[in-house]
Length: 194
Image 1 (cartoon, rainbow, N blue to C red):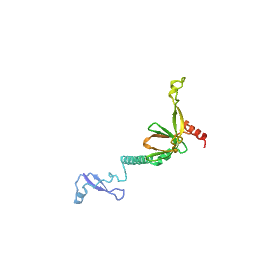
Image 2 (cartoon, rainbow, N blue to C red):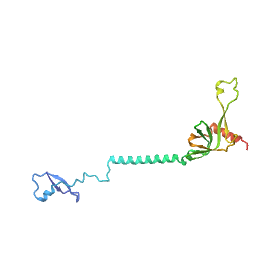
Image 3 (cartoon, rainbow, N blue to C red):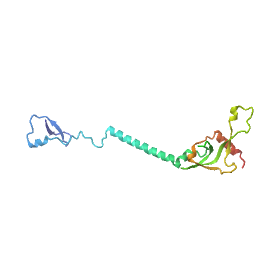
Image 4 (cartoon, rainbow, N blue to C red):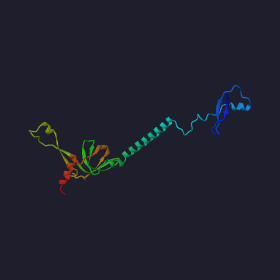
């Protein structure tokens, strides 16, 4: 098989193509022409033509990077002071549930890494009669009568603000304005004497 350079009509590019010939190369110059070409330019893909697999890989890497950055940002934001400012509805009351079973109702003023500040505080107090009634059913006797108490009316006279350690808080939630606790607070505030 004799490899010779054949002219192409497509300009000044020369491509190596095999040509069949029954005679070997006739001159030393022709012998040099029969050596293998440096490479076929048609088989090489330029660096800017990505394959489908490389495009998919790049898209997946970018998507994963965006997800990781978003997750890190959200976790930092959730642990920062800013998250609580958006979660606490300032015009509503919140219920704060503690690890000892106590529940306080009030307005969350601030939260930091160590403490939650609660103001305008109320809590539930169970009032059971000293002597059970003789004609009451057993279910009625076991259910305590709950009343809402305003913090600050106790014997020791605390201020109406409380700092609760965050490790003692199970969770807190915003209260609806039409809920029983919020309505009882509104009723108390309406009926209190200055």
